[in-house]
Amino acid sequence: MAHPLARMARAVYHPWPMALLAGVLSALLLLAASQLFASLQAQRMESAEMNARGERFLQRIEQLFGQLREGLDELEGQPLRGCDRAMVEVLRQVSFSHRFIYEAAFIGGRQHCSSWPRQSSLDVNRPPDIKGTRHQYWLNTSAERDDDLAALVIGRGYFRVSTSRGHLADVVDLEPGSSLLLVGKDSGQVLPLLGPQPIWPPKGWPSPEDRPLLIGGEQLVYTMPRPGQTFQLVLVAPRAGLRQRIDDIWQPLLPACLLLALLTGALVFQQVRQRQSLTGSLAGALRRRELHVHYQPIIDLQSRRCVGAEALVRWQRPDGTLTHPDLFIPLAEATGQIRRVTDYVLEEVLEQLGDLLRSHPQLYISVNLAPCDVSHSRIAAVAARLLQRFKVAPQQIAFEITERGMVDVQAARETLSELRAQGHKVLIDDFGTGYCSLAYLQDLPIDYLKIDKTFVDTLGHDAASSGVAPHIIRMAHALELKVVAEGIEDDAQARLLASEGAHSGQGWLFDRALTAQKFRERMAAQAEVP
Ligand SMILES: Nc1nc2c(ncn2[C@@H]2O[C@@H]3COP(=O)(O)O[C@H]4[C@@H](O)[C@H](n5cnc6c(=O)[nH]c(N)nc65)O[C@@H]4COP(=O)(O)O[C@H]3[C@H]2O)c(=O)[nH]1
Image (cartoon, rainbow, N blue to C red; front, side):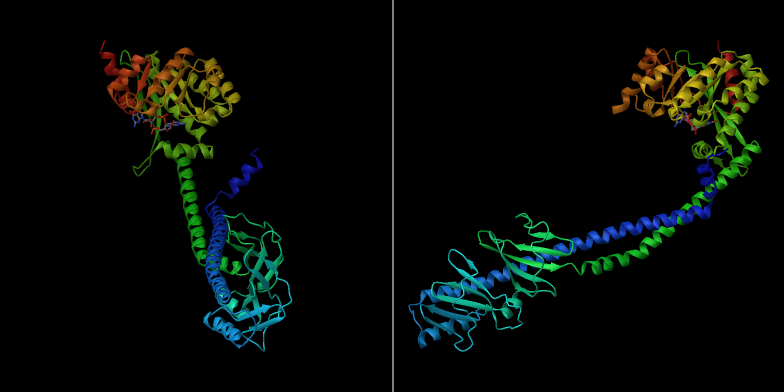
Protein backbone atom coordinates (compact mmCIF):
# COMPACT_ATOMS: atom_id res chain seq x y z
CA MET A 1 0.00 0.00 0.00
CA ALA A 2 1.54 3.31 -1.08
CA HIS A 3 2.19 5.93 1.57
CA PRO A 4 -0.58 8.61 1.59
CA LEU A 5 2.02 11.32 0.91
CA ALA A 6 3.39 9.42 -2.07
CA ARG A 7 -0.18 8.92 -3.33
CA MET A 8 -0.87 12.63 -2.98
CA ALA A 9 2.38 13.52 -4.77
CA ARG A 10 1.45 11.19 -7.62
CA ALA A 11 -2.03 12.72 -7.86
CA VAL A 12 -0.55 16.23 -8.10
CA TYR A 13 2.24 15.23 -10.46
CA HIS A 14 0.53 16.29 -13.67
CA PRO A 15 1.53 19.21 -15.89
CA TRP A 16 -1.31 21.59 -14.97
CA PRO A 17 -1.41 21.14 -11.17
CA MET A 18 2.39 21.23 -11.00
CA ALA A 19 2.57 24.33 -13.21
CA LEU A 20 -0.11 26.02 -11.11
CA LEU A 21 1.66 25.09 -7.88
CA ALA A 22 5.02 26.28 -9.20
CA GLY A 23 3.47 29.48 -10.58
CA VAL A 24 1.67 30.33 -7.34
CA LEU A 25 4.66 29.46 -5.14
CA SER A 26 7.11 31.40 -7.27
CA ALA A 27 4.68 34.34 -7.44
CA LEU A 28 4.43 34.37 -3.64
CA LEU A 29 8.18 34.07 -3.28
CA LEU A 30 8.91 36.76 -5.85
CA LEU A 31 6.32 39.11 -4.39
CA ALA A 32 7.73 38.66 -0.91
CA ALA A 33 11.29 39.13 -2.17
CA SER A 34 10.37 42.23 -4.19
CA GLN A 35 8.51 43.69 -1.17
CA LEU A 36 11.59 43.14 0.94
CA PHE A 37 13.78 44.68 -1.74
CA ALA A 38 11.46 47.70 -2.10
CA SER A 39 11.30 48.16 1.65
CA LEU A 40 15.09 47.99 2.06
CA GLN A 41 15.59 50.29 -0.91
CA ALA A 42 13.03 52.80 0.42
CA GLN A 43 14.64 52.77 3.85
CA ARG A 44 18.07 53.25 2.32
CA MET A 45 16.82 56.20 0.29
CA GLU A 46 14.98 57.62 3.30
CA SER A 47 18.10 57.44 5.46
CA ALA A 48 20.31 58.90 2.73
CA GLU A 49 17.88 61.78 2.27
CA MET A 50 17.61 62.44 5.99
CA ASN A 51 21.40 62.43 6.35
CA ALA A 52 21.74 64.83 3.43
CA ARG A 53 18.97 67.07 4.77
CA GLY A 54 20.56 67.05 8.23
CA GLU A 55 23.95 68.02 6.82
CA ARG A 56 22.37 70.76 4.71
CA PHE A 57 20.47 72.12 7.73
CA LEU A 58 23.59 72.01 9.83
CA GLN A 59 25.48 74.11 7.30
CA ARG A 60 22.67 76.67 7.13
CA ILE A 61 22.16 76.76 10.89
CA GLU A 62 25.88 77.23 11.40
CA GLN A 63 25.66 80.13 8.97
CA LEU A 64 22.77 81.58 10.98
CA PHE A 65 24.55 81.14 14.31
CA GLY A 66 27.68 82.58 12.76
CA GLN A 67 25.81 85.76 11.79
CA LEU A 68 24.30 86.12 15.26
CA ARG A 69 27.70 85.74 16.90
CA GLU A 70 29.25 88.12 14.38
CA GLY A 71 26.58 90.72 15.22
CA LEU A 72 27.30 90.30 18.92
CA ASP A 73 31.05 90.64 18.34
CA GLU A 74 30.46 93.87 16.40
CA LEU A 75 28.29 95.28 19.20
CA GLU A 76 30.77 94.24 21.88
CA GLY A 77 33.60 95.74 19.86
CA GLN A 78 32.08 99.25 19.53
CA PRO A 79 32.64 101.73 22.40
CA LEU A 80 29.05 102.74 23.22
CA ARG A 81 27.48 101.50 26.44
CA GLY A 82 24.12 102.97 27.48
CA CYS A 83 20.83 103.72 25.80
CA ASP A 84 20.80 106.86 23.62
CA ARG A 85 20.02 107.66 19.96
CA ALA A 86 23.53 106.67 18.88
CA MET A 87 23.15 103.21 20.47
CA VAL A 88 19.76 102.64 18.82
CA GLU A 89 21.38 103.60 15.52
CA VAL A 90 24.21 101.10 16.10
CA LEU A 91 21.70 98.39 17.01
CA ARG A 92 19.67 99.09 13.85
CA GLN A 93 22.82 99.09 11.76
CA VAL A 94 23.81 95.64 13.05
CA SER A 95 20.28 94.33 12.51
CA PHE A 96 20.09 95.68 8.92
CA SER A 97 23.50 94.44 7.89
CA HIS A 98 22.91 90.83 8.96
CA ARG A 99 20.19 88.94 7.14
CA PHE A 100 19.39 86.61 10.02
CA ILE A 101 19.44 89.18 12.85
CA TYR A 102 15.84 90.17 13.47
CA GLU A 103 16.49 92.34 16.54
CA ALA A 104 19.54 93.66 18.36
CA ALA A 105 19.32 95.03 21.90
CA PHE A 106 21.38 96.61 24.68
CA ILE A 107 20.52 95.67 28.27
CA GLY A 108 22.53 97.32 30.97
CA GLY A 109 21.32 97.72 34.53
CA ARG A 110 17.93 99.46 34.35
CA GLN A 111 18.45 100.62 30.79
CA HIS A 112 17.46 98.68 27.75
CA CYS A 113 16.97 99.63 24.15
CA SER A 114 16.42 97.76 20.91
CA SER A 115 16.63 98.11 17.15
CA TRP A 116 12.81 97.71 17.31
CA PRO A 117 12.05 100.27 20.07
CA ARG A 118 8.25 99.90 19.92
CA GLN A 119 7.81 96.24 19.17
CA SER A 120 10.69 94.62 21.01
CA SER A 121 9.90 91.00 21.75
CA LEU A 122 12.75 90.51 24.22
CA ASP A 123 11.90 89.59 27.77
CA VAL A 124 14.70 91.36 29.58
CA ASN A 125 14.11 89.72 32.94
CA ARG A 126 13.98 86.15 31.78
CA PRO A 127 17.03 84.06 32.75
CA PRO A 128 18.77 82.30 29.83
CA ASP A 129 17.60 78.80 28.87
CA ILE A 130 21.15 77.69 28.15
CA LYS A 131 24.29 79.17 29.61
CA GLY A 132 27.39 78.57 27.51
CA THR A 133 30.95 79.66 28.28
CA ARG A 134 30.83 82.76 26.02
CA HIS A 135 27.19 83.03 25.03
CA GLN A 136 23.81 82.69 26.62
CA TYR A 137 20.73 81.42 24.82
CA TRP A 138 17.03 82.14 25.13
CA LEU A 139 14.46 80.23 23.19
CA ASN A 140 10.97 81.32 22.48
CA THR A 141 9.08 78.09 22.42
CA SER A 142 5.65 79.63 22.16
CA ALA A 143 3.41 77.75 19.75
CA GLU A 144 2.02 81.03 18.44
CA ARG A 145 2.32 81.30 14.67
CA ASP A 146 4.02 84.69 14.64
CA ASP A 147 6.80 85.18 12.09
CA ASP A 148 8.23 88.12 13.98
CA LEU A 149 8.63 86.30 17.22
CA ALA A 150 12.24 86.11 18.35
CA ALA A 151 12.63 82.37 18.24
CA LEU A 152 16.27 82.27 19.27
CA VAL A 153 18.14 84.92 21.21
CA ILE A 154 21.88 84.92 21.83
CA GLY A 155 23.43 87.18 24.40
CA ARG A 156 26.93 88.23 25.23
CA GLY A 157 27.82 90.90 27.78
CA TYR A 158 25.32 93.81 27.53
CA PHE A 159 24.04 92.82 24.12
CA ARG A 160 21.53 90.38 22.70
CA VAL A 161 20.62 89.53 19.14
CA SER A 162 17.67 87.45 18.02
CA THR A 163 16.55 85.66 14.92
CA SER A 164 12.88 85.31 14.08
CA ARG A 165 10.96 82.11 13.67
CA GLY A 166 10.45 83.09 10.05
CA HIS A 167 14.23 83.23 9.47
CA LEU A 168 14.71 79.95 11.18
CA ALA A 169 11.95 78.37 9.11
CA ASP A 170 13.55 79.78 5.92
CA VAL A 171 16.88 78.26 6.80
CA VAL A 172 15.63 74.89 7.87
CA ASP A 173 12.72 74.48 5.48
CA LEU A 174 11.03 71.75 7.50
CA GLU A 175 8.63 69.26 5.99
CA PRO A 176 5.14 69.05 7.52
CA GLY A 177 5.17 67.16 10.80
CA SER A 178 8.95 67.58 11.27
CA SER A 179 10.49 69.38 14.24
CA LEU A 180 13.76 71.09 15.04
CA LEU A 181 14.81 70.69 18.65
CA LEU A 182 17.51 71.98 20.88
CA VAL A 183 18.59 69.30 23.35
CA GLY A 184 20.88 70.03 26.28
CA LYS A 185 23.82 67.64 26.05
CA ASP A 186 24.12 67.04 29.78
CA SER A 187 20.75 68.14 31.10
CA GLY A 188 18.75 66.36 28.41
CA GLN A 189 16.48 69.44 28.43
CA VAL A 190 14.44 69.59 25.22
CA LEU A 191 13.35 72.86 23.62
CA PRO A 192 11.42 72.77 20.37
CA LEU A 193 12.65 75.48 18.01
CA LEU A 194 10.32 74.70 15.15
CA GLY A 195 7.48 72.29 14.57
CA PRO A 196 5.49 70.20 17.07
CA GLN A 197 6.99 68.73 20.22
CA PRO A 198 7.64 65.02 19.48
CA ILE A 199 7.59 62.21 22.05
CA TRP A 200 10.95 62.48 23.76
CA PRO A 201 13.37 60.78 24.23
CA PRO A 202 12.96 58.35 21.33
CA LYS A 203 13.99 54.69 21.71
CA GLY A 204 17.74 54.28 21.29
CA TRP A 205 18.56 57.90 22.18
CA PRO A 206 21.28 59.13 22.32
CA SER A 207 22.66 57.53 19.16
CA PRO A 208 26.41 56.85 18.92
CA GLU A 209 28.54 59.89 17.99
CA ASP A 210 29.56 58.44 14.63
CA ARG A 211 25.96 57.63 13.65
CA PRO A 212 23.97 60.83 13.57
CA LEU A 213 20.81 59.14 12.25
CA LEU A 214 18.57 57.18 14.60
CA ILE A 215 15.87 55.16 12.84
CA GLY A 216 12.76 54.57 14.92
CA GLY A 217 9.55 52.85 13.96
CA GLU A 218 7.61 56.10 13.49
CA GLN A 219 10.30 58.74 13.09
CA LEU A 220 13.84 59.52 12.00
CA VAL A 221 15.99 61.47 14.41
CA TYR A 222 19.03 63.27 13.06
CA THR A 223 21.44 64.73 15.60
CA MET A 224 23.56 67.40 14.03
CA PRO A 225 27.14 66.83 15.09
CA ARG A 226 28.34 69.90 17.03
CA PRO A 227 31.39 68.76 18.97
CA GLY A 228 32.23 70.82 22.04
CA GLN A 229 28.80 72.51 22.24
CA THR A 230 26.58 72.40 25.31
CA PHE A 231 23.47 71.61 23.30
CA GLN A 232 22.62 69.57 20.26
CA LEU A 233 20.43 70.47 17.34
CA VAL A 234 18.11 67.63 16.53
CA LEU A 235 15.92 67.20 13.51
CA VAL A 236 12.95 64.88 13.87
CA ALA A 237 11.01 63.76 10.79
CA PRO A 238 8.01 61.41 10.70
CA ARG A 239 8.28 58.34 8.49
CA ALA A 240 4.82 58.85 7.10
CA GLY A 241 6.04 58.86 3.48
CA LEU A 242 7.81 55.50 3.80
CA ARG A 243 4.80 53.34 2.84
CA GLN A 244 4.18 55.43 -0.26
CA ARG A 245 7.83 55.27 -1.20
CA ILE A 246 7.86 51.45 -0.80
CA ASP A 247 4.78 51.23 -3.03
CA ASP A 248 6.42 53.50 -5.60
CA ILE A 249 9.42 51.17 -5.83
CA TRP A 250 7.40 47.97 -5.57
CA GLN A 251 4.64 48.64 -8.06
CA PRO A 252 6.88 48.75 -11.16
CA LEU A 253 8.39 45.42 -10.04
CA LEU A 254 5.00 43.72 -9.89
CA PRO A 255 4.60 42.97 -13.61
CA ALA A 256 8.14 41.53 -13.77
CA CYS A 257 7.41 39.28 -10.75
CA LEU A 258 4.17 38.03 -12.25
CA LEU A 259 5.82 37.47 -15.61
CA LEU A 260 8.63 35.49 -13.96
CA ALA A 261 6.08 33.41 -12.02
CA LEU A 262 4.23 32.76 -15.25
CA LEU A 263 7.47 31.70 -16.94
CA THR A 264 8.30 29.40 -14.01
CA GLY A 265 4.86 27.82 -14.31
CA ALA A 266 5.33 27.37 -18.06
CA LEU A 267 8.78 25.86 -17.55
CA VAL A 268 7.49 23.43 -14.93
CA PHE A 269 4.58 22.54 -17.21
CA GLN A 270 6.99 21.72 -20.01
CA GLN A 271 9.37 19.77 -17.74
CA VAL A 272 6.61 17.69 -16.17
CA ARG A 273 5.07 16.97 -19.56
CA GLN A 274 8.48 15.99 -20.93
CA ARG A 275 9.18 13.76 -17.93
CA GLN A 276 5.75 12.19 -18.14
CA SER A 277 6.13 11.52 -21.81
CA LEU A 278 9.61 10.11 -21.16
CA THR A 279 8.18 7.97 -18.35
CA GLY A 280 5.40 6.76 -20.63
CA SER A 281 7.82 6.11 -23.46
CA LEU A 282 10.17 4.20 -21.16
CA ALA A 283 7.31 1.96 -20.03
CA GLY A 284 6.50 1.33 -23.71
CA ALA A 285 10.16 0.74 -24.54
CA LEU A 286 10.42 -1.88 -21.78
CA ARG A 287 7.25 -3.55 -23.03
CA ARG A 288 8.45 -3.56 -26.65
CA ARG A 289 11.97 -4.57 -25.53
CA GLU A 290 13.54 -1.54 -27.19
CA LEU A 291 16.28 -1.18 -24.57
CA HIS A 292 19.60 -2.65 -25.58
CA VAL A 293 22.45 -3.79 -23.42
CA HIS A 294 26.04 -3.05 -24.43
CA TYR A 295 29.17 -4.45 -22.81
CA GLN A 296 32.29 -2.55 -21.91
CA PRO A 297 35.17 -5.02 -21.52
CA ILE A 298 36.99 -5.14 -18.20
CA ILE A 299 40.70 -5.79 -18.67
CA ASP A 300 43.24 -7.40 -16.35
CA LEU A 301 45.85 -4.64 -16.09
CA GLN A 302 48.80 -7.07 -15.87
CA SER A 303 47.93 -9.48 -18.69
CA ARG A 304 45.77 -6.97 -20.62
CA ARG A 305 43.24 -9.75 -21.27
CA CYS A 306 39.49 -9.27 -20.98
CA VAL A 307 38.21 -10.82 -17.77
CA GLY A 308 34.69 -9.46 -17.80
CA ALA A 309 32.41 -6.66 -18.92
CA GLU A 310 30.10 -4.07 -17.49
CA ALA A 311 26.54 -4.21 -18.82
CA LEU A 312 25.43 -0.71 -19.86
CA VAL A 313 21.90 -0.10 -20.97
CA ARG A 314 21.10 1.88 -24.15
CA TRP A 315 17.75 3.23 -25.27
CA GLN A 316 17.42 3.57 -29.00
CA ARG A 317 14.04 5.08 -29.93
CA PRO A 318 12.13 3.74 -32.96
CA ASP A 319 13.08 6.99 -34.80
CA GLY A 320 16.75 6.16 -34.26
CA THR A 321 17.46 8.77 -31.53
CA LEU A 322 19.57 7.54 -28.66
CA THR A 323 18.48 8.53 -25.14
CA HIS A 324 21.45 8.62 -22.81
CA PRO A 325 21.28 6.51 -19.62
CA ASP A 326 22.28 9.56 -17.58
CA LEU A 327 18.91 11.02 -18.62
CA PHE A 328 16.51 8.13 -18.26
CA ILE A 329 18.11 6.14 -15.41
CA PRO A 330 17.56 8.93 -12.83
CA LEU A 331 14.02 9.32 -14.16
CA ALA A 332 13.41 5.58 -13.90
CA GLU A 333 14.79 5.72 -10.35
CA ALA A 334 12.41 8.56 -9.48
CA THR A 335 9.36 6.83 -10.94
CA GLY A 336 10.14 3.36 -9.60
CA GLN A 337 10.57 1.91 -13.13
CA ILE A 338 14.22 1.18 -12.38
CA ARG A 339 13.40 -2.27 -10.96
CA ARG A 340 11.92 -3.29 -14.28
CA VAL A 341 15.04 -1.88 -16.00
CA THR A 342 17.34 -3.89 -13.71
CA ASP A 343 15.39 -7.11 -14.27
CA TYR A 344 15.34 -6.38 -18.00
CA VAL A 345 19.13 -5.85 -18.15
CA LEU A 346 19.82 -9.00 -16.13
CA GLU A 347 17.59 -11.04 -18.37
CA GLU A 348 19.11 -9.53 -21.54
CA VAL A 349 22.65 -10.27 -20.30
CA LEU A 350 21.81 -13.90 -19.68
CA GLU A 351 19.84 -14.27 -22.87
CA GLN A 352 22.55 -12.66 -25.05
CA LEU A 353 25.67 -14.02 -23.36
CA GLY A 354 24.45 -17.07 -21.43
CA ASP A 355 26.25 -19.51 -23.72
CA LEU A 356 29.47 -17.40 -23.74
CA LEU A 357 29.46 -17.34 -19.95
CA ARG A 358 28.89 -21.08 -19.79
CA SER A 359 31.84 -21.69 -22.11
CA HIS A 360 34.11 -19.17 -20.26
CA PRO A 361 33.63 -19.98 -16.58
CA GLN A 362 36.18 -17.29 -15.52
CA LEU A 363 34.34 -14.52 -17.40
CA TYR A 364 31.93 -12.30 -15.51
CA ILE A 365 29.44 -9.55 -16.37
CA SER A 366 28.70 -6.84 -13.87
CA VAL A 367 25.23 -5.33 -13.70
CA ASN A 368 24.43 -1.93 -12.20
CA LEU A 369 21.95 -1.82 -9.33
CA ALA A 370 19.97 1.29 -8.43
CA PRO A 371 19.60 2.45 -4.81
CA CYS A 372 16.08 1.01 -4.57
CA ASP A 373 17.33 -2.40 -5.80
CA VAL A 374 19.70 -2.36 -2.83
CA SER A 375 17.28 -1.10 -0.21
CA HIS A 376 14.71 -3.85 -0.91
CA SER A 377 15.68 -7.48 -0.73
CA ARG A 378 14.30 -8.64 -4.05
CA ILE A 379 17.17 -8.72 -6.51
CA ALA A 380 18.77 -11.85 -5.03
CA ALA A 381 15.61 -13.86 -5.69
CA VAL A 382 15.25 -12.45 -9.23
CA ALA A 383 18.92 -13.26 -10.00
CA ALA A 384 18.59 -16.79 -8.58
CA ARG A 385 15.52 -17.49 -10.73
CA LEU A 386 17.16 -16.18 -13.94
CA LEU A 387 20.50 -17.90 -13.33
CA GLN A 388 18.72 -21.18 -12.84
CA ARG A 389 16.79 -20.65 -16.07
CA PHE A 390 19.93 -19.86 -18.09
CA LYS A 391 22.19 -22.28 -16.25
CA VAL A 392 24.86 -19.69 -15.51
CA ALA A 393 27.01 -19.79 -12.36
CA PRO A 394 26.28 -16.97 -9.87
CA GLN A 395 29.98 -15.98 -9.63
CA GLN A 396 29.74 -14.94 -13.30
CA ILE A 397 27.29 -12.16 -12.48
CA ALA A 398 28.62 -9.30 -10.37
CA PHE A 399 26.56 -6.41 -9.05
CA GLU A 400 27.69 -2.79 -8.90
CA ILE A 401 26.17 -0.46 -6.37
CA THR A 402 26.98 3.20 -6.03
CA GLU A 403 27.62 4.92 -2.71
CA ARG A 404 24.20 6.57 -3.15
CA GLY A 405 22.69 3.12 -2.81
CA MET A 406 24.06 2.89 0.69
CA VAL A 407 21.78 5.47 2.30
CA ASP A 408 20.07 2.79 4.33
CA VAL A 409 23.24 0.95 5.38
CA GLN A 410 21.41 -1.78 7.27
CA ALA A 411 19.17 -2.66 4.30
CA ALA A 412 22.17 -2.47 1.91
CA ARG A 413 24.17 -4.81 4.13
CA GLU A 414 21.35 -7.36 4.11
CA THR A 415 20.90 -7.27 0.32
CA LEU A 416 24.63 -7.47 -0.36
CA SER A 417 25.08 -10.32 2.13
CA GLU A 418 22.29 -12.21 0.41
CA LEU A 419 23.89 -11.67 -3.03
CA ARG A 420 27.30 -12.76 -1.80
CA ALA A 421 25.83 -15.78 -0.07
CA GLN A 422 24.43 -16.79 -3.45
CA GLY A 423 27.95 -16.53 -4.93
CA HIS A 424 27.82 -13.13 -6.66
CA LYS A 425 30.64 -10.62 -6.52
CA VAL A 426 29.72 -7.15 -5.25
CA LEU A 427 31.43 -3.91 -6.31
CA ILE A 428 31.15 -0.35 -5.06
CA ASP A 429 30.90 1.82 -8.17
CA ASP A 430 32.14 5.44 -8.58
CA PHE A 431 34.06 5.01 -5.34
CA GLY A 432 35.25 8.28 -3.81
CA THR A 433 32.46 10.48 -5.16
CA GLY A 434 29.90 9.74 -2.45
CA TYR A 435 29.80 9.52 1.30
CA CYS A 436 30.88 5.96 2.00
CA SER A 437 33.11 6.22 5.02
CA LEU A 438 35.96 3.92 5.84
CA ALA A 439 34.06 2.66 8.86
CA TYR A 440 31.21 1.43 6.63
CA LEU A 441 33.64 -0.09 4.12
CA GLN A 442 35.20 -2.31 6.75
CA ASP A 443 31.79 -3.58 7.62
CA LEU A 444 30.19 -4.03 4.21
CA PRO A 445 30.12 -7.41 2.47
CA ILE A 446 31.91 -6.35 -0.77
CA ASP A 447 34.62 -7.67 -3.08
CA TYR A 448 35.74 -4.76 -5.27
CA LEU A 449 36.11 -1.01 -5.21
CA LYS A 450 35.63 0.71 -8.55
CA ILE A 451 37.64 3.94 -8.75
CA ASP A 452 35.66 6.74 -10.37
CA LYS A 453 36.81 8.19 -13.68
CA THR A 454 37.40 11.64 -12.13
CA PHE A 455 40.29 10.26 -10.06
CA VAL A 456 41.72 8.33 -13.01
CA ASP A 457 41.60 11.52 -15.14
CA THR A 458 43.85 13.43 -12.75
CA LEU A 459 46.42 10.64 -12.39
CA GLY A 460 49.91 11.88 -13.15
CA HIS A 461 48.66 15.48 -13.32
CA ASP A 462 49.45 18.24 -10.90
CA ALA A 463 45.88 18.31 -9.55
CA ALA A 464 44.89 18.19 -5.89
CA SER A 465 43.02 14.90 -6.47
CA SER A 466 45.86 13.17 -8.38
CA GLY A 467 46.80 11.19 -5.28
CA VAL A 468 43.28 9.91 -4.61
CA ALA A 469 43.39 6.84 -6.89
CA PRO A 470 46.66 5.44 -5.40
CA HIS A 471 45.26 6.17 -1.95
CA ILE A 472 42.05 4.22 -2.71
CA ILE A 473 44.14 1.31 -4.04
CA ARG A 474 46.22 1.18 -0.85
CA MET A 475 43.10 1.37 1.25
CA ALA A 476 41.46 -1.45 -0.75
CA HIS A 477 44.53 -3.63 -0.27
CA ALA A 478 44.44 -3.03 3.46
CA LEU A 479 40.81 -4.16 3.47
CA GLU A 480 41.62 -7.12 1.20
CA LEU A 481 39.44 -5.78 -1.60
CA LYS A 482 40.19 -5.83 -5.32
CA VAL A 483 40.27 -2.66 -7.40
CA VAL A 484 38.79 -1.87 -10.80
CA ALA A 485 39.57 1.50 -12.34
CA GLU A 486 37.10 3.03 -14.78
CA GLY A 487 37.48 5.63 -17.51
CA ILE A 488 41.08 4.70 -18.50
CA GLU A 489 41.76 6.66 -21.65
CA ASP A 490 45.52 6.41 -22.09
CA ASP A 491 48.25 3.90 -21.61
CA ALA A 492 50.14 5.95 -19.04
CA GLN A 493 47.08 5.81 -16.77
CA ALA A 494 46.81 2.03 -17.25
CA ARG A 495 50.50 1.52 -16.45
CA LEU A 496 50.40 3.78 -13.41
CA LEU A 497 47.29 2.07 -12.06
CA ALA A 498 48.85 -1.36 -12.62
CA SER A 499 52.05 -0.31 -10.85
CA GLU A 500 50.02 1.01 -7.91
CA GLY A 501 48.31 -2.38 -7.63
CA ALA A 502 44.92 -1.97 -9.38
CA HIS A 503 43.81 -5.37 -10.63
CA SER A 504 41.66 -4.48 -13.60
CA GLY A 505 40.27 -1.56 -15.50
CA GLN A 506 37.95 -0.45 -18.24
CA GLY A 507 37.91 2.54 -20.53
CA TRP A 508 38.19 3.84 -24.04
CA LEU A 509 41.89 2.90 -24.12
CA PHE A 510 40.75 -0.72 -24.37
CA ASP A 511 37.19 -0.62 -25.70
CA ARG A 512 34.01 1.41 -25.67
CA ALA A 513 30.75 -0.36 -24.79
CA LEU A 514 30.24 -3.06 -27.45
CA THR A 515 27.12 -4.80 -28.71
CA ALA A 516 26.74 -8.41 -27.56
CA GLN A 517 27.85 -9.57 -31.02
CA LYS A 518 31.00 -7.39 -30.99
CA PHE A 519 31.81 -8.52 -27.46
CA ARG A 520 31.60 -12.15 -28.57
CA GLU A 521 33.91 -11.38 -31.47
CA ARG A 522 36.36 -9.71 -29.12
CA MET A 523 36.37 -12.76 -26.83
CA ALA A 524 36.84 -15.03 -29.82
CA ALA A 525 39.81 -12.94 -31.06
CA GLN A 526 41.35 -13.07 -27.60
CA ALA A 527 41.01 -16.86 -27.47
CA GLU A 528 43.12 -17.12 -30.62
CA VAL A 529 46.01 -15.25 -28.93
CA PRO A 530 47.77 -17.56 -26.44
N1 LIG B 1 34.48 9.55 -21.13
C1 LIG B 1 34.64 8.25 -20.88
N2 LIG B 1 33.56 7.54 -20.49
C2 LIG B 1 33.76 6.23 -20.25
C3 LIG B 1 34.99 5.59 -20.41
N3 LIG B 1 34.84 4.31 -20.08
C4 LIG B 1 33.56 4.12 -19.74
N4 LIG B 1 32.88 5.28 -19.84
C5 LIG B 1 31.48 5.54 -19.57
O1 LIG B 1 31.36 5.71 -18.17
C6 LIG B 1 30.15 5.16 -17.71
C7 LIG B 1 30.48 4.11 -16.70
O2 LIG B 1 29.35 3.61 -16.13
P1 LIG B 1 28.82 3.99 -14.69
O3 LIG B 1 29.85 4.70 -13.89
O4 LIG B 1 28.29 2.71 -14.10
O5 LIG B 1 27.65 5.04 -15.01
C8 LIG B 1 26.52 4.59 -15.64
C9 LIG B 1 25.46 4.03 -14.70
O6 LIG B 1 25.46 4.78 -13.51
C10 LIG B 1 24.19 4.32 -15.45
N5 LIG B 1 23.78 3.06 -16.08
C11 LIG B 1 24.10 2.56 -17.30
N6 LIG B 1 23.49 1.37 -17.49
C12 LIG B 1 22.78 1.11 -16.36
C13 LIG B 1 21.91 0.04 -15.94
O7 LIG B 1 21.71 -0.96 -16.64
N7 LIG B 1 21.32 0.15 -14.70
C14 LIG B 1 21.54 1.21 -13.88
N8 LIG B 1 20.96 1.22 -12.69
N9 LIG B 1 22.35 2.23 -14.25
C15 LIG B 1 22.95 2.17 -15.47
O8 LIG B 1 24.44 5.29 -16.43
C16 LIG B 1 25.77 5.75 -16.27
C17 LIG B 1 26.31 6.19 -17.60
O9 LIG B 1 26.46 5.10 -18.43
P2 LIG B 1 27.12 5.28 -19.84
O10 LIG B 1 26.61 6.45 -20.53
O11 LIG B 1 27.03 3.98 -20.54
O12 LIG B 1 28.62 5.61 -19.48
C18 LIG B 1 29.47 4.59 -18.94
C19 LIG B 1 30.62 4.36 -19.88
O13 LIG B 1 30.25 4.35 -21.25
C20 LIG B 1 36.10 6.39 -20.82
O14 LIG B 1 37.24 5.91 -20.98
N10 LIG B 1 35.87 7.71 -21.05
